[in-house]
Length: 180
Ligand SMILES: Cc1cc2nc3c(=O)[nH]c(=O)nc-3n(C[C@H](O)[C@H](O)[C@H](O)COP(=O)(O)O)c2cc1C
Image (cartoon, rainbow, N blue to C red):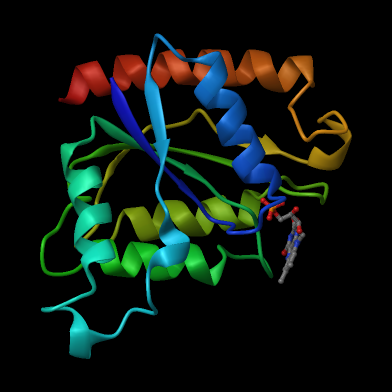
């Protein structure tokens, strides 16, 4: 099963990215996860949407041929980061590659609420007419105080978070098989 991941942080030291990398390793054999290079996307502009840079087409083609989408989002100022919104705006135009794609959300923050507000906001965006992914219901993964749940290399070591991810990934695979 071929899953594409959109990480809403383009920082080299992103905790969200590290968690997706952890998932790539841990669920190898069950699913393949490819992280999309959303940092290469230009700012969305309607003036160029019909003849966009090739990277836009390449990333959209990967989404189109995937079995599902994993979105890992930080929370910036009680919402999703601009880089993530920019990517979703690109993916919602011209060719509607998100529509009816199974999706799931996780999020990690250094605060105590673990991206609750960002994920609420993201679920609303995923419901919009030109995106409308088939988002996995329930299965909320809010990783709060993430800095205390990883080792010195940023690898996730928190057992209860790992157990939750194991369960949610199984639920996501079942969801993909159910809706496809
Ligand atoms: C511009 C900005 C706004 C932030 N706003 C929030 C916020 O609203 N809630 C929160 O829990 N953390 C907030 N944070 C802290 C992030 O949770 C923290 O930087 C996190 O590590 C970002 O994710 P990343 O490591 O994947 O890049 C903010 C950080 C930045 C840089």
